Image (tube, rainbow, N blue to C red; front, top):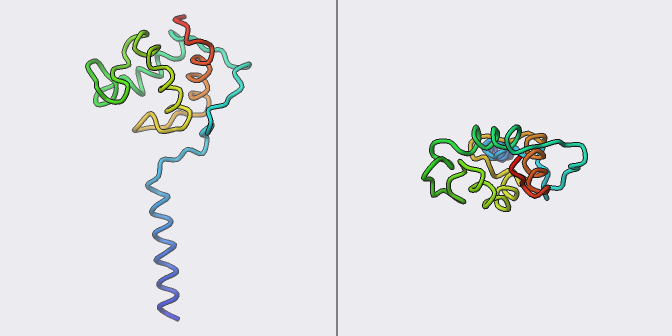
Length: 119
């Protein structure tokens, strides 16, 4: 009886610890499908600030970076990497050290889906 109880508690502990170390993507859009009809987004006002604060920083995608798609400090760099950015934002694997909210993910993906205009 003691061995069974111990084994059960051990398994529960492993499951709890494994889930505690996992990045939480409950608000993840999975495929990245969002309704962009209700979202107003522009590069200068909404996308650029998100990229600057969450991506274009030290040890990530700042000037001179060779991580992933490289630096994301200019419109041209972001535009050229837009397909990869859309994928990693939609699936929740980026930003690396934080999580975008569903609204932030929608802001970036809808901007990209609209052609990633420099507006």
